Length: 623
Image 1 (tube, rainbow, N blue to C red):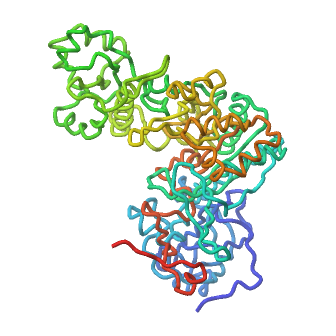
Image 2 (cartoon, one colour):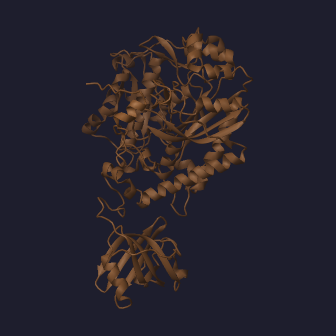
């Protein structure tokens, strides 16, 4: 028989009591985490968000309470009324914060029972993620998940507080707006009132935050919900949250310092010291040094080793002499067997037209001096894995070979990218081998959840990447497309090459990367209508087309728009890194699967014919 709570109130949480509380009368409320029946003694581990306290039911002290405890099972909701006492020295549990005490209960109330759950929230890990998502309310009871959302809360509050202190105003922007091109498919909402028309859920508040700058708000931020209908992976969800901000009259460095300020505050909120300022690198240098535009600084970068080979050496090795030759180093992996090297082949992207050499013993027989020089240039130590990546002379890279002064060609980028991706995949694979440098989707070291801190310079390695290309070439259409959104400002000194040499134009665009993940992107925006029209023209967009797609925004630009810029950082990704989680699903309360399905509420679902008629919609399903 179930009991009522009545007028009973909790006096302490289940993670609060300590040795100094011995002798106090207490009321604890929570879930039964575990139950252990020793005959005359029954032990209930009572759990809430704050921790676990052991409750003792002694048949000789309270027959009624003991009888009630016999009915209790895991995940029952109970109230325990009793006194705190010290445990004997031989039964102190050092793994529990409350391990020095226990509560001897004089009364137990069972406030609600529970079916046998498909998994126990007391378990450290549950392998079947689909079951976890279907019973998310049980999964969220687990200590790991509770910790993740405490981290999320602390980070969000620290960001809000810091930006508020810097005179930013938090302003909400609409969820229902018009469809604009931002790189992914929109989620569309049909209008009941205006037949045949649709709202779009925002992929970001981009145009609205620029409108707010035109409106004179000077400094805006928002913890903004965004929606993108795109293929999912571990660090993507169809609906996500970003820390969105915009400023008037900023230099790029102004925005960097502001972001570094709230990042430092966010990390400090969970006990992590994050050094500032963050290092900076241009896009071209990031590709040369790391082969990727979101560098992971915890691993050695790429090394240019072309100089160690003569022209005849390159010909013998079937290496394209016109393209880069680089080496990557993964520390402390140890010598690989032939089978292990063969197993690594699928990790290398051969579609890029590059090749690699990983058998240095064989290479050393023909080119001993080159191998000696290779080890010197890469600063390789005993047990480090060394691999050479270069253009394959036998397979011409299917990309443009033209490049502008000072910029990398598409063929060069293909080689660097092949090396960079291989570097990351190998680092993930060998992260735990012989103490190899850890590069995974998780952080190298996590802070103690309660008291400790870690050195952010070792575990968390942020870097700004700047001067991205303004345009990218679409080989299918032969047109130049915006590499980012079309409201990004080019460098002023590159303006005269917008149509004559679009490949050379640099965008005032920047990314913040950390530990191999892109945390956020931003740019200095176009604030002049004539410049915006030049960009549209460079993209092959007519004045009429631009007006149809962005008319309201182009008109707003004509009413005294100040120079402005901003950035958006993924809150979910930031929390994922800080929590040491492997997926965004671990830090979003009610996430979707990789197929964009909510298993708990079983969405999406069909709707009634009546609802469809009201929306003037008739579904046409493909076979």
